[in-house]
Image (cartoon, rainbow, N blue to C red; front, side, top):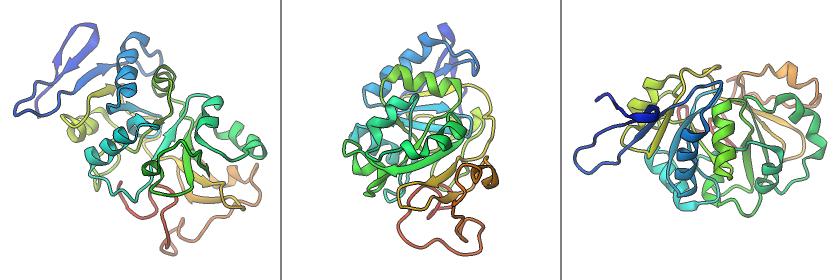
Length: 259
């Protein structure tokens, strides 16, 4: 793999042969992200392009959640099965109202505990969210990441960003810069490089759309900590590996090992 060429303003770009996509590389400080650089990435999101960006869990492959054409590019870039729903990332609680139709007031204690952070919550989806994002489900998975670069990118984009992990399907989720360069170079318009991710593990996922809260995917947050605000949290046997998950996948990770 060819190394990106250094350009002014800390940008990098890969020279492509054979008509493949040019991938712009942006080096952004993980704690104090440069707004000027991220504005360029945010503009690409608004134009329907794909941008790889860091979160505190893994690197994500982002697209405008409301742009169905952009969403289909995500599946194509990853080689991802279209029956595997995506997670939508927000940067403030007002943005949540654009994504879900459910009254979330009863879960305010939980959201105050886990957001911003490495926890994804599933609610009834807003009709404005394309069915391709949710694999045809009436529910949608949402996360409010704590990573400063992710937050700033979403804020500057002005739209919720749908983002699975930025790896080719079937390969492990990317936690290092070299991982996303190897998998996504020439497949996306922009890759933001900000060093290794903090947790290196996909987010915890909790379904809040079907009555009793249910843990669908373990992650960085201990279930016992969650039970402090969700005392009736159900932990299915498939979460611990004692049984296989059956039915439509409500979230990433239920049907495919790497996604």
